[in-house]
Image: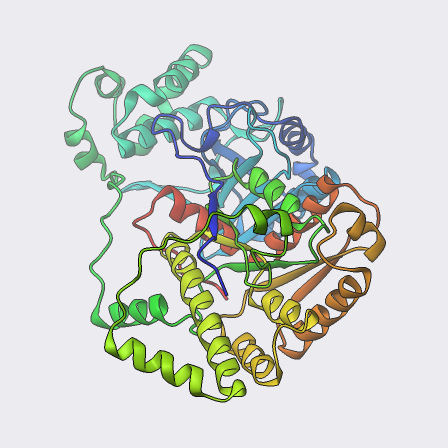
Length: 495
């Protein structure tokens, strides 16, 4: 049984340190329409306290990584409903994570558009502490509703962005917004002065270029955003657990996002997995797609390849005495013993080889999509009658013991349609495989979804596959996103 031919396709491109995760790209048509409809929603009637407070100026065409907004706690359910209804109306996916101080919303478009940004992220808080004596609450702000999304009036906008510039120690980034506020509303300084006890001269001094902001940060009690923390050293218990996960492919973890995709050869699962990888390539979420070959695909199945295969090397290999004894014992053993030994070693090598790649994805907090898994190996060896009773028993026990996926996805189609694409299995074998796979997943009590091809094209199947994967992972996608952007901050699973 061979899993050494497994290859890993990393679908997440490396981030650009200046414009990470595609934030320099304009939004796709679907995302732009989402922001336009969001701006046209009945916010005064449904969530009157909702207001976007920062990094919204480029909408609906552009936005930085996240968009900060605020709403009173009583309006958060209505805000969530507006976002979900708007996304659903456009065929987008809306994930909402609830926290102690608000909600976070991630909107995804399932589209392979490398030139455009296909995701948007909102953080909606009930309050924000901007300085020692300045806690921002939405009910205190004057909200402008004349154009687009509800936004703070220029005096409030000036105060919010000035304190954010101090928090990030980066006035140059926020200077265009601050100058815009002063140009449109010259007395924007007044609110900042009243809230922070500053006069116009002191505010102008803060706005001066090329100066150290430490003194102003200390005086106003602005919490400076710290650099990304280094990962803490692992405890001995965590080291022991990781060592076990690395070596024991029967051991599972709640934070291992493993998705297996099954189906007869020719049903289109590899094509669908590749398309899903292209969709996720535009998201700030790591995803690995595994394509590996299992032992039921024998190298000599193709007589042409078998006839043209290169002859093995004639140099005799040195055999150790122990190996010679084991080899003699194997040849002298009854057939059922040899069958059991072949099955045990084959499944063991398969699990050990594949586990190394799964474990690395676990360390990197990436989604793992397996195109085929041990269940396929077990069923196809049985369908081709390549395993005896003992081998079948060992295979079934391996299916029960190996790390179970978070969700298994079975793609099925009419046997006639499958064999027209690829003549790997006969019509009867295809029919038996599809029936047996669903029965096996039920017997093993593995959560699974069946996707019917039914004449649909690969893009439609990939869309359903991606939605199934996102639904299985749920709001943990937001935690994976944060870890991808700030690797030192390890996310904790909500499951």
